[in-house]
Image 1 (cartoon, rainbow, N blue to C red):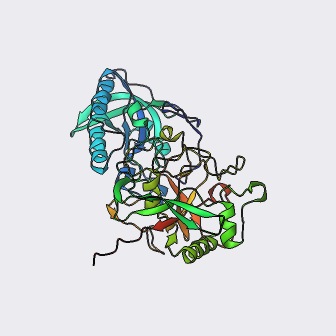
Image 2 (spheres, helix red, strand yellow):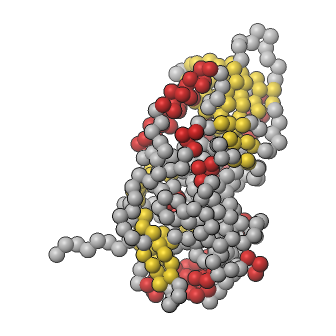
Image 3 (cartoon, helix red, strand yellow):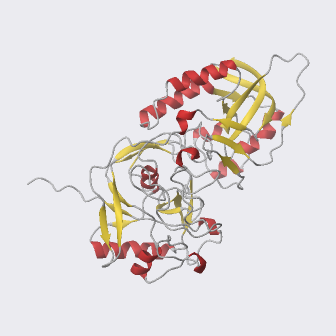
Length: 422
């Protein structure tokens, strides 16, 4: 995720086109070569399936690559049909999502033989998964399907099956009304209830776009919580703190507040807590992702979120007020924003590989944290807006120099425990 950006065009039909100028790599086929076939699909480093960290990738060791063949000759198309006949989405729970991944692995997963062609192309798939077209001969051994490549083209187009691109439907709807955090006689923060539940956080391996550190893992949230309907607006932030750090040309009462220092984020939450008598804080990364995905475990293809995608917080564009796009099915607006990243309360690092219950992120000083004083930020964009990519929000006395990543924020309110019966 820290690699330089390349541009991606994502159409509403789920056609993914990488616009980076990758070379087409080829070597002469042997004179007696077996019949070649061409596989098309997400191409990735197998190492990322095992969980990884930045330092592992910086060593630039060679790892085995794989491709999920979503297109190819007739036998591949037949396999895709078999797989999609077993797809029970949209709106998979954890067990169904794991089962679907296993079906894909059994039917569509091909290992890519290491050779000079693959080694040259492999550099492109260590950080990110790329849509690729691999031509070579297919064999089977040790219960696995292999392709020995003679040509790899990574500026390819992949048509994902339409059922994978349908918007998610919640597995459960909230059983409670929104609450209002009263700020003054004129302003309040409206918060919607998010039910407790579990989901497969991170990205399934067949998803594109996908970064190496988005390892899928089950997350259980044992308590419901309320989350602000929109990012914090400038008029609300100024009413609480007396400050508006947003650049002058981007100001407006209903625009999200931008460039907030970490200390001021914490002071805002403390003050709102005191005024309202409720526990108000930043969401954890797990809470934000769960709310943005409406509790589901499906793949997060950007084409699914076209009606929700907002431009608030994007400093390359004009300032935009909140609530200009449709909310998600739980009533949250502006969760997915082009270059507008939401600050979360926990520190940022590669996703864990194990099941978690009410995760709070790695502890301060942990080697799991990417950089010192870096907190998780979600809901933004690299190669396509989606809820399961993460970046960072930096503590410090001044905003971070990269204006794209300064971010926006919304609060959560802890659901009050049900009183014990007398």
